Length: 215
Image (tube, rainbow, N blue to C red; front, side, top):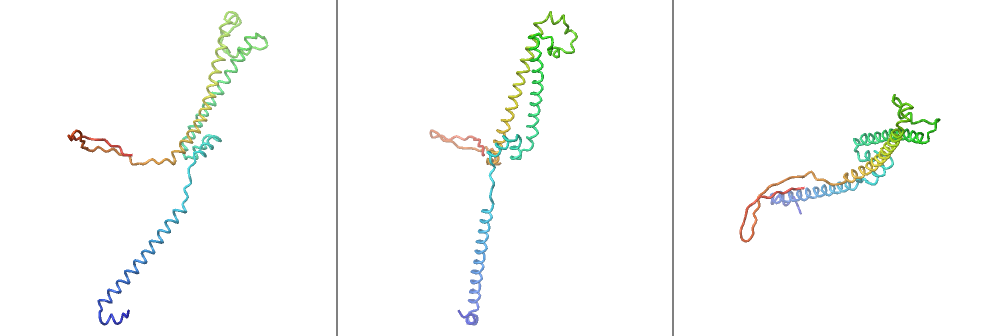
């Protein structure tokens, strides 16, 4: 089209043509920008790789080294509590084992009555009433005391071992459950709504209230 001819004869038409060309060019540029933005966004989304949080790894780490699974889950505050439990149970095992051995040896030596082996005296050490005369007159009391002490500390030693094993297993379970909840989608939108409703039955309408919980 000869723009000079339009300009001379119909200047308004020239303005309209120029506006049309400008609109087409702007739309083309905008579409190009939108297309490039979409391509860049898709490229960014594809480049972002979400590393899954593995419950299997958390379990394995806690099995190899208690507390390592909690560190993997970033629950660091649980580690001191876990090791405090282990420390208390180790102390209980050591305490009960020492007294169990003392009463067991004392009971054995009392039954054997070997003059060269009198480890039972350590059980009654520091008690002024534990004399030779007392040994003769209260032999059954001494035997029962030694046997009951042996059984008592053996029971608590075994329970301490069970407690240690339970803490170890709980450590693995805790790490596994925490790892599962890491990827569990819990919405913050928890709301309660009370609203009126209209119910109809047998041709009659009634107005009431309903309670709705939105999760």
